[in-house]
Length: 233
Image (cartoon, rainbow, N blue to C red):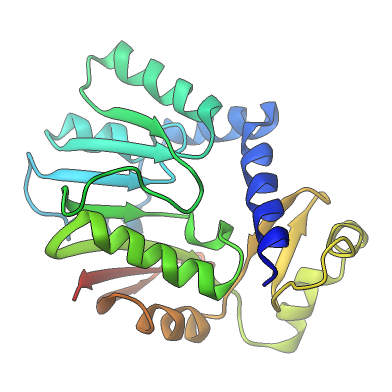
């Protein structure tokens, strides 16, 4: 993907999550905590007080419950607006979780600082395979040797009808027309929000090219996510 277009898409993602409607949605969602499938995935974390990096933490949906359990949680996100919501929730509950804004593809931490990392519902917002795999290397850099990365990715069935439905939308076409180097299954919501969808096989193949090895795979009951435990090589 053209780097200028990639950076435009990353900025578009950040601006989308800063919108009032998105902030309201994710603030409300944060109160629900982890889903049942995510709770199974989270059993792969080391015991508290392990240092956990929650990437794309949003309003603290996962970070806050982990902090209650005694984990040393650092939540990072590109949206300062969502982070302010997370900080407020942590303060009201007397929790020690820390929240920090980061650039989209850079983690501003020293090497080997964390015992584990989470990247739940965030991988799909990085444009281009090259940038996604490079970001996985950046995550590996801040993890201790052998540490786990718990990751979820949005997936769609491989049927032509299901794949076609993602891009059969006037607002999608309107937004996509501004870019010349999109990947297949790059999609736009309301002509603004950007998401890259995967088939399950494509997601697993991409992860196999990273700095991690696949240890566990779970399929969410709703059929729209694959949840994986990866281990730093």
